[in-house]
Image 1 (cartoon, helix red, strand yellow):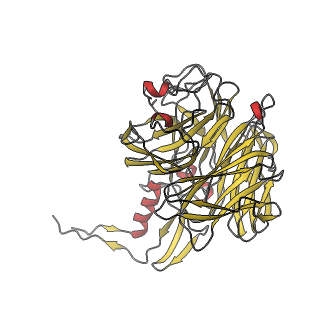
Image 2 (cartoon, rainbow, N blue to C red):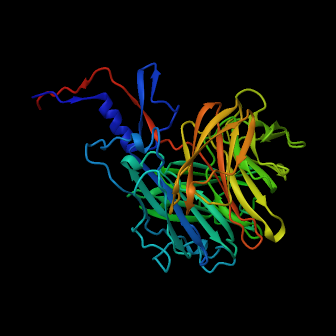
Length: 530
């Protein structure tokens, strides 16, 4: 028998093609490691999940989707997949099969809304049918959008392949003008995973916080939800072994998991089997609602970018995830440099306990970002998030800013409008130069490119330059060019009847490329003829 030969590069390329989630270490075409030369190739498959957007009959939701072009993106993606077949010419986002909530959960839905959190059933007027292709990209670099209304829009499960995979992103933006869910709710649809941390949730009576679990796969996922308060783990009677059926979405009301009332809770979502997308939908009786997305990977130092200049109240919530306490220096990166807020110089975070720090109107009229660093040494790993309030009294609105990692190669955020978009760029160390591309609009326009320099240890908040002849919504792509690390966030404002409704999305790296070893010689698999 002939000996079949398997090339190491072919095997590695196949692995890159099917994962789509490999981590980035540097924006380079090739790297040299102890094991030899490593090439960076575009991923060939990317998955994203969006939870059911709202339980309100008056909700209006827009989905805006794009795959950016450029170095390491669609322009350089291979023309065939790992199996040699032609690439798919379209990228689609399809609706997941509806999940269900128990009667106990639905009875405690948002006040002022007629629908409960089980509002993911059969399609009604304004909602797409389960399984229907909802958003289809025709060309990389040009965003598309779709709209849905009412309480019955289900969760979305999407996959992009071939040239549409590297950097593919979808933004879900929902406007609810009345009821307990009132507010502007926005989130960048997330990748499925097995572990998530959400500091900043709550089980107090004025809050209705649901963890939405979406399973994109064909087998059931088993999920554990742990809650951590100021005194450590919160006893949760029903948080273990939650089944999430195949290709379904399940909402879980946090206050049904425990009888303890805690204003600041860190939620830990992990899977025993399978993987899920997870996000927390938080609604405050007097302060609006928004999505709380997961904090970045636990680390000794974290950055929370994009606090609006007119924030009236800011609360920091943090948890030390390991066995050691964390002593953190608290600093604010302003347009002029980094300062230490008077009276809020430090935060002690005990192991496995949630700590909160009330920062008030910390920005004082200038946009900023919070930088947390260990008081000494490398520090214990922490996760953190900010609850941010704009406006006062009945005209208040809330949003959340989780800690996020720096952009190593590229990041994109969709659904920017002609008015109301602000891009915040933070350089916690050395100064940095970044390239920002505004895509064409969903209904027309020409892309524009701007280059910004962010001073060392500062935050630069800019109104992005919109595409020439803009029609519709557009996407922003941020690419560091030189200097130190850069963290970014986008604020979208849509005022309504005097309420400063807003939402903030951080920009983690899109992980559009993966490291693939270059083999010097083929590895042969011996065949003994049997």
